[in-house]
Image 1 (cartoon, helix red, strand yellow):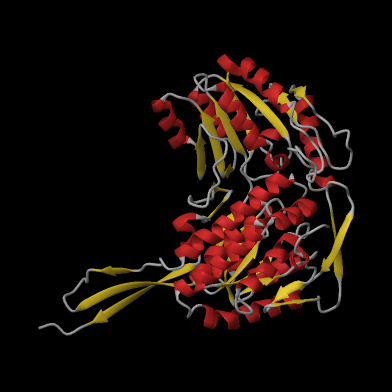
Image 2: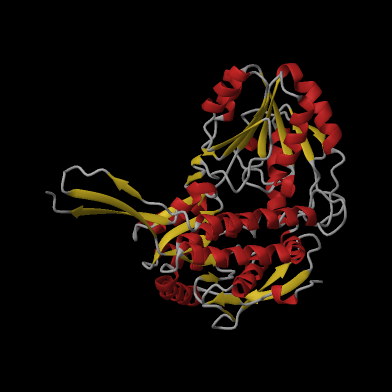
Length: 486
């Protein structure tokens, strides 16, 4: 691994401001999904190390919360600057452990750093309220205070941004954090931990627990009485389990879970723009994003023309090692992911879907999969209710707005939705009727620091980013003061 700053390649846990081995000396392998090759070995921590990190975070919280928002913001700002100074190395680490194209990884680093920059400013804007008293001799004040030690469990598909999106507001609010990164991609987390140490975070404020024992570490984080808040991004089944485990200690919980995003194209849409938006949404990170287009609904009047234009552009998407030039689609994360995609495609084809493009493993081998388009997809197919997490575009035909709204909402998930059209009345009707936490209108890209990210239904609750993101890590305290009156 060729880096300008070799200090960014860390293989140990980061606990109380130091990089340390697992107590028993155990490690696990990190591999490159593009080549299958060995990258390095990382400390394999368990319950003991996690418990220690929680205790150190609790001690650190007592001093960290007493700093002013301006003081915390200065350290966060320095962390942001260090991320941007080391952006190329961070992108290289991310691509090598996760597989996405290097240019896309660099975009993730910028996106992740933007949360640190944003919340460095928000740290000094934790405003309370004064409320007119209910009696003449009463004064009412509402304070906002940091909730305490925060646990964050993050996924492999965005191993940088999913951490910063959680911990930047938590740290800005005055909380301390213990993070369990995904077992497939801990190197990105450890790299930004090194930069956090350089930025001047006090020991114990930020802790990283790499592990190949996700259930064991997750159990400690979700049941420990010192941990007051858990934020999780990942699958709905795991999110439900963590929520149950948090119940006994009544933790505050934020969950960003699975998605099944509809992408709707109405007959009056700009088809070229819709094609570009669908590609940007669907094939980013090889389709391995929770907000990517999962079901493409095209109005029957323009169905054939859309497919023609879409196929022509998707056919030119270059598949390959993320470190190679002009690669747009990297590998799937592992063999299990490929087999899932294969099952969904086989089921759809057996029930009448037509392979318009691709439809199999790529000639490069490994876990590379061809960019695929399926036409004539129906709601009876498994792919209709399943988050694909791969480069397959299932395309449906629909007749009118009511028809497509019903199909789009026919899922327990409610994270992101997209649609293209020009009729202003229709735009408001569809936007209000779609049962999703985020809706992109005439755009396939909706993620930004300044807007609240999150879903409804079984896609979870809580919001990340924007002014609302800070609220997830604060508690409100009401003060009622009796005063003398003349």
